[in-house]
Image 1: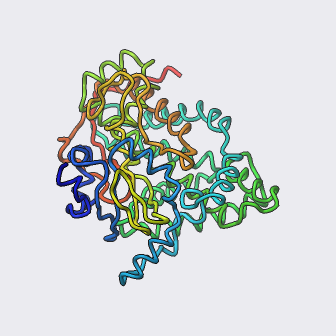
Image 2: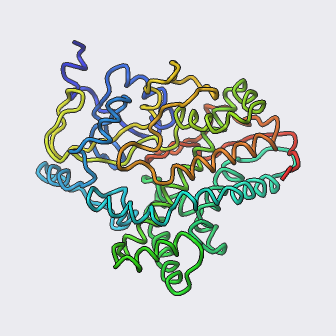
Image 3: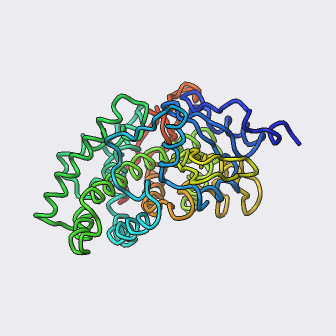
Length: 415
């Protein structure tokens, strides 16, 4: 038995800081060699457990005693002389931070408005937005792809889907980008600003309903005997914006960066654009933008992989690490990028009752955006050394703050 297996509690805590996040795939690979779960320190000095193995990740994400309710953690910390203060302004009352039966009710009501048909109907508009953004690029030269393409595309899609007026789009994009960066000074202000904007828009949609998602959510709240409270309505809209927007921004960025670092895979995908839907699954596995799950808390003393987890302990699942550890249908995996991989297994959208409601929209956007970009911008190259790129330093999102690229031409649209 290894020293790790004998006493994992005495191992040094893994500190999830900006240096770790910038080098996350390699750091997780080292951790997986030692075991599937590790003591860790997260933002604001919060301590808990980090799950890095695929099998244990699936178990943790569905464990009946790992809940979103942080009351046991607050009690445990208070007994040790600490206080777990939840911010006064967050994503609000929404399903990502609730347990059944509240989660079941909130998810059912949100799903009633966020329908598969509503997502599918967005495809032509997503393609149009992608072409418009490429049309606005210089005909040749160097740009920041995050600013020019990756960020505005999903921001425009979710803003139009919700029915946010164009005059608010610029502020909305900025606030959505800041909201999940928990260690940034803009984090709380961005959340408060989004909350205020959505509350005003919801009041307006109630007076003047339109064919958009906010109006549909209002209708669920008003026509279903008030089963979606006003705060839950705002919280659900904020969740769709923050979780859906920022994760797709960096799914695009991580995908393009992976291709630029693997030119043979880029060339193959240019020759075989039919591979794109499967390639998107491989990008989600290879370097997912949602690096870690949101927190869960032990409702009572339990064990994970034989490791005692005391009541009130925080448990976080490294979704990106699990993708590298997942058994693949035809073998391989890990850090190897293979856009021809059939049915890549990953946990990028979570697992169990908190599986991402917006997964179909993210897949749709990524497939259309990448197809359009690769078709119209040939000879795309990275315009910086990979080691010089600045990565998001806090929170659950993994991605670069900017992605400098160069190209020689932009092909005209065939649409």
